[in-house]
Amino acid sequence: MILAVYVKMLVFLDEIIYFFRNPWLGHPYFPMFYGGGPNLEATWFAFFSAFFISSRRKWLFYFVWLACMGVGLIYASRVAIVMNLISFFFFYTSPYARRWERQFFLIFGAAVFGYLITFIDWQLISEKLVAVQRLLSVGGSEDKGMQGRFHLWSGYAQALRAGWWSGTGAGNTVPVMELLTKKSFGEDNVHNIYMQCFSDFGVIGGLLFLILAFNILKDFIKDRANLFLLSLVLYLIAGLVQFRGGEPYFYLILGLYIGKKYEQPEN
Image (cartoon, rainbow, N blue to C red):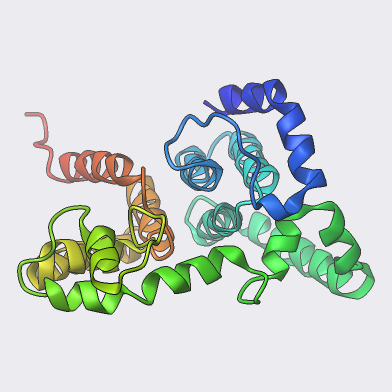
């Protein structure tokens, strides 16, 4: 899959170059393997490295992680970059990382951080690297991604009140928001899986999903070496700002985890 994504980027290299020359586009646009555009493809792709964490063949994890981070940088996906960093942090704090590795990355990370804040002209770098430009603009008036989300969420309360008990129905939140606010949001979801569950399925459905998320997090705290749980936690974190297209991934991994957890031992 990693190879396929990079081959695809070579095929559409002209589109990527055009995007870097025109960063106002937000992301490069060409055919994606995942539905929902480059931001979502880069985000779900960021989870792949989690399954390569192990006590052996560390080089393979580092290679896959760098490849996944590369996709996030080229696609200028802030969520993907953050998810890759969180994935690496979980590796760093997991039982799979040896003591000398933790010490090395702590010293190396501190040295790199000190160099970056002391000697790097971030304004100049952001002009060359779109992903850095988008990270530096988080929360600002020029941050189209977050401004679009804030605009979308501005109509959420009305949809929630309209179906607070029984819900508006699966996938109906945005159409209901548009109907009640007389606005067009140009989206098919609210970019937050927790909000979507409460408005789509009502208070009962929303609470059930929160209970599911809480139990996943609780199990992960107890068993940080479980890669199924790690990938589920990554999805739940990403779900705070987007989730479209990743639902089959989440429930597939959840099913594999439950099956593994409750499998009957061989006699």
